[in-house]
Length: 377
Image (cartoon, rainbow, N blue to C red; front, side):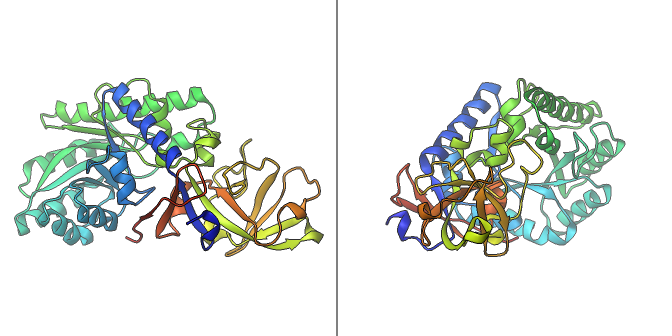
């Protein structure tokens, strides 16, 4: 099947670019002397997760329990669920443990730690727990030196229904860094902060084996990860316009695109309309306000070649609005109604979330494979 035969909008994955992205991150982890634990929240697809682990099942990170269940069905056993646990979700955790999944959950709350122990004791399970550390005031987690870190560690160490296995962080503020120097600094702050948290726990006489950090920007710019045991990253598999703008890759490395069709000419408004709107592209405008702002995505021709003077300026629910960047007259004859275009996303994770499968090409227009993905929570 050819790309032109696909019903639009739909997802296209360029396998050559994907494999190159996977190889580069694998090489980074090897150079830094840490295990790579891919975060599958971006792709949510077994074939891609297998490729990320050299063709075999391996350690992964998930962002939903639905992902954990989906990947467990495919034989993945070593899984970190990297979103704060609440007691109401522990039944699904137990179900995964009963399937012999080596599941680790994360917390940042004393009362939740106590509830997990109580649950584990009640059902005769030992639930593996990691303490989430906040290294940059971005999201959830405790500061490395917060007394609650040691308090939670002691509670878990004393209880019979849970086990402390380590600490975990995500340097989310790295996404706000504008220069290479800032990214290097963010990566080193992530490194030193998570190691300090682990050392504080060990200093209290409690074992802390796993020290887990990572994001695509900090993984790309980290210079030293001494004391860290594993590196997590997710968007690197596809990359996107934001990562390219921040220097984690180039636009030509972006492996994911949305195939769309020109459905209308608005000659009085100097623009064309496609069938890829906010639902197909997402309304994530992470490049807004930067010097690499690309609206709702980078416009390409059917072969994936970037059309430099075009920009997706608007995204209604099912309409994508494309015009010229410099305000020059739109050359409508070059894009008759029915023309197929490809849009490289601002944020691959958000864009891919609207779809249930990927159409895979290998640098050409022929579809060589179809890869399913999971959705939901």
